Length: 267
Image 1 (tube, rainbow, N blue to C red):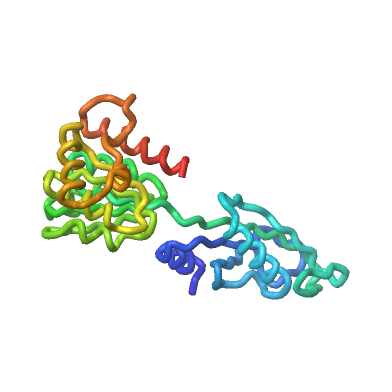
Image 2: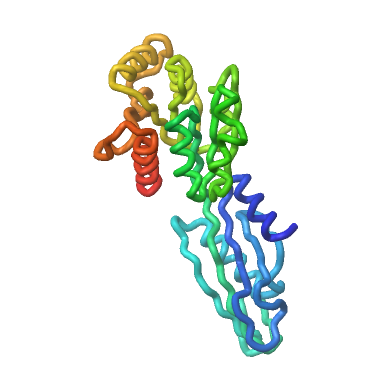
């Protein structure tokens, strides 16, 4: 398995890891500069030369995996018989510097409703390294032509067309996904709110709309859905930053995205 495939596998599993690269080589060493190793919690893929270098790098990588907000770091190894490492001696005669780059689990966001605001929001979020799920019950909102504006996305985009029950997508989302509900249909929004509150493991839940809309939804979630007040309060509405005003779709999307990024930073 290539290191690129290994990194992709960790991302798909939503598991943290560390990319280990031989940064510099002086003299003789088991591998050339650029050799890579990917380390996960229990598995590793690739090699930077085996022996003490690799074993120590794996140990340190797993320490980083267990550290909050780890930073990249360099490790230096002298490869001679006068240096006894934790996992033995390597006497190639050279010196190696190894770079360890943490691979954190990226944020995941699900936008329900890819109308005017939803598409503008997707355009902003797509510029960030995250997993972006775009869901709509209307096929014409998810055509290649319409989503073509996301062709150069940094985010990994997952498109869900759900003509009957959009709320079923909630059960498929990875743990910790932040949910934003902004469909074209208030009944669809209400069903999604109810389902989101019943779905374990989600991140934040946001609902677009007016105070009057939320008053009706809150009453319905309590009387028909059976949710208590604490549970209902998991839903944030209105979404966005109050100081960013304006009703243009791009302005609303900017406000919602900024609020979401602030949530990421505080979380």
